[in-house]
Length: 464
Image (cartoon, rainbow, N blue to C red; front, side, top):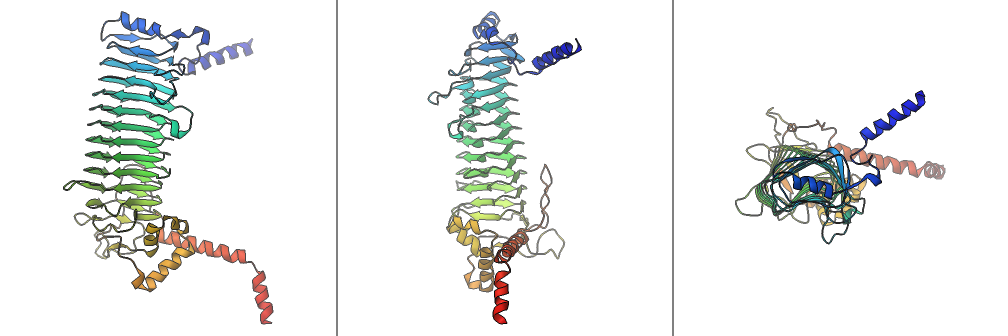
């Protein structure tokens, strides 16, 4: 009797903790027409509480209502087209599980699509959907605290988790995205993007022709690219974290042909490239500013096209990047500024000193490496980073200064300590130069061990 009672309690607990609709037998699934009937019976602007359960079909909401699922309602589209369509302004859609959109890319089927605005889409869970939340000309809308999980398919075939098309003055905050393509903003201005998390996707946050936007306190990790700004002006990135974005390009932040971009107080860690800048700022009189960021443990801390100019980079902590700053091709970065108003950057491989005790080095930080110059021409040489080959090339260049290339850039006022950036504190650790020397010694030691003792004994025999 006791065992049966325990079994019943366990079953009841499992039903209580199951996701919305999971405990509903297929035979008890209802058609979405039941929800439509509730909407049509309610006056405009009314709150409609949808009874718990599983509903099948595509839901089209054509009247302004507040539609609440309270986390207990699942709408399953059955793999056909859009699951939910919001076709009138002033709709709130909150607290539902939405799943099972179509998978054909020709019509870009979505879990939730809004064709007009403003609308509020909040606290929903979307799963097994090609596109997640798709706003088209839905200005002044709010997309808040949703979870979006894309279809289990090849990354190249996935759709966008959250997409805004010509939707201005929107707020996108508190959303959690994984296994999608992008969170993308097309032709959408004055958007507030904050406190979102994106992982296991292509581009975490992707902007195309979208201006006057602030990105604050977002966390993007494990994607091909963290944040990519393209042809978008007046963008501010502040207090975001971009880490472990290591796809073929692997940018923590990428900027292409943008004006008036400010990157401040961000944590850019363990990406393939921390910050990539291509022809930005683009226009005369525009600015590009990178300051007070932690740029640490990336393969390349900052990568810039040699044609780039007028980019200001100061008061950052460049810590233990394999290559602190590099050019994407032949040329140098002397047309850009690496110190502003007497403050440069902190470089973990700086070998200077601060005799005056003012927190700034007395000797300029000069990026002048023969190996890095060769690597800019032949990127495959990166294979030999921290190897005896690199050490030999650098030693030769120091011994014969005529072989040194023109400096890549100069920081006249390097900092002795890194700036304070919100988030977890990262210790500078050993310098990059010491790390390279240790790696070279390890390789040399391995070669000695591989050589073994037999050649030595032969030499000793030959001497005797």
